[in-house]
Length: 249
Image (cartoon, rainbow, N blue to C red; front, side, top):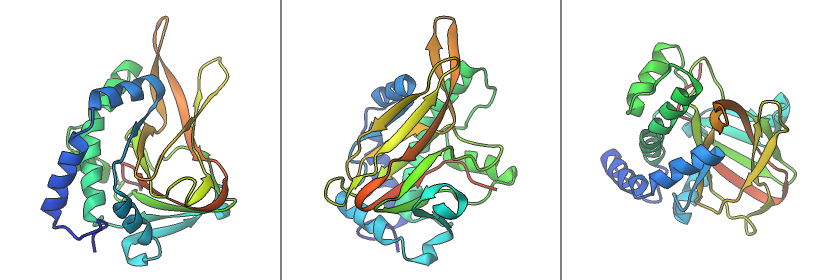
């Protein structure tokens, strides 16, 4: 069963998602990523699609592994990594979002003096990951309850890491949960760290830096280090869909 409200053939999901993702102002979103290390993509999923994705969580046939955060010191809460093949809508979103974000990633690497460049197509990038031994899918579904949180971290699963990822909030703040804000911290050389809380509504996505990003200084660009997490839930339940573009070892 697909993760869309009504099952779609793969080609229909891909066409719909290409149009949906392409309709956003990517010049403005790229500017937000350059300026702040994150960009909010409003209403990427409908409320019905959010509910359908969240309802997949107990269905183990969709997932390759289950992680309880407290067992590993990651925080409190849990998440499941999807297995291949991904649900049609998820796979199509991963493909189309990568295509839009790869030029930003390449520009960042150029500014930071990193020789790595990313191909325009996600399938080509996955072949590079798989040739390097990173073959396990990384898109995930996260679930938090009252008192849960996600400690600040970076999603690095091997030597290869695409520098931007996307999280989509599947629950409605104020109705489904309280607290549970998405948080980014940025560690700048010889300066105190900067924190940013990113406000999201159900169906909104945030694209953000995984590890490093370039910042313009008086003497050119310099590299800053970022981490992300989720603050403590005060009440309710929160589901999030995470789209990571590199695969894992």
